[in-house]
Length: 146
Image (cartoon, rainbow, N blue to C red; front, top):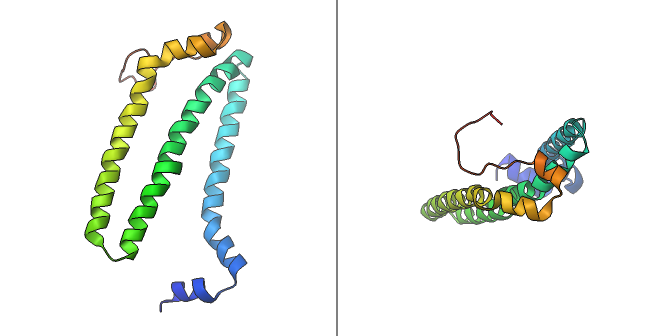
């Protein structure tokens, strides 16, 4: 048995879990800090800008949880179990299917705002928030331009 496996099986539980969880806790703290800093920056622009940000936030969270939370966790679990069962070929097939599924979901979540961006904004927002959140009405390759 290698040292890592022995440490997982024989070391005290709390320090072992703390050592394993530390990188994830750090990443989550950094992501939360970035979100708070962005919100603070937008708040300097006024309440209308914050209202526009509040309209976009649920959609952004949905896309993030779809990729990292739901689909990402399920795919990681399936590939890990397959590799643990020493079925390398099946793990490769699972990874390929995950890439195709991820590409399809990425395209789908990218096209939804182009189809329903303005109508959904009109339904949800008042005139002030509508003026702050201007979704693109057609696909473009203008990175960095507003």
